[in-house]
Length: 365
Image (cartoon, rainbow, N blue to C red):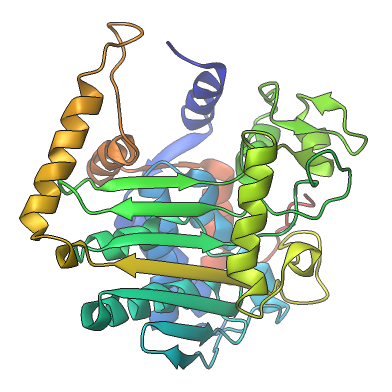
């Protein structure tokens, strides 16, 4: 069974305006473009690594194209290119990262690296991050922990694009969360936002003049729409109705309220608000499964779980059962060999940025 949004996604990824470029080529372009804004080489490399990790795993809306949004904010001093990031110890297993309005991937990477470090010593950690910016996709951060054989959870709040359930005011971000479990190299990685679809994907639909699937968004008046521009002006819908709304609020509490960062409409838009920083917060939790049993025993239990799930009767013989992270691992392997798809316009603008040419207008929505 192929769902309509899968067909739309395939069309986006196979547009005749798309070319394939190697990881190394895109990495070099991205780092050069960031370096020109005054970002240190180390921070440039971290940022581009996290963004390209999303591209490799099939989340292009949160990949290197985000530099087209980060760099204008860096140039307008709305993101600090040289942050003084401070780690405050609140308890042996609890730390607070003060990001000094640095690039989101830099602050978030520091948060996850600190979480891994604390977990090595204490077996578990909770790391909050404040005064940060958009960090891309959540999945790449839990993968950092999975590679250390730790379970991980990463979450962030985001600029409000949803209304409270049964409401019409934009007060709730889609607030993504990722859960990672180390297993069989590909790892279990659930990476989801609390909306039916992220605004980044809706923006892709708008760029390609495609119609949205029904049930993704409503207009400012709460009327269902399949027009991506009307959706971007209105509200995205929460997944699972009131359940997605409740989860989004919970993640906002952990990311923003708890850390002292912005929350609800205190989180600002990268694209629409150019008078102050974003005030985004993140949180990271990591856990060492070897405290419960030998890691080999844990992995064997994971194998048993996967075997049970994959042996279930299928709706159709021509489809497979995939667990979260498997498809992304397959896509990553393919793209490392054959290149990352990127639309020509985005590539042209990235090349311009890498040459110090900023004749570029950001999206309005």
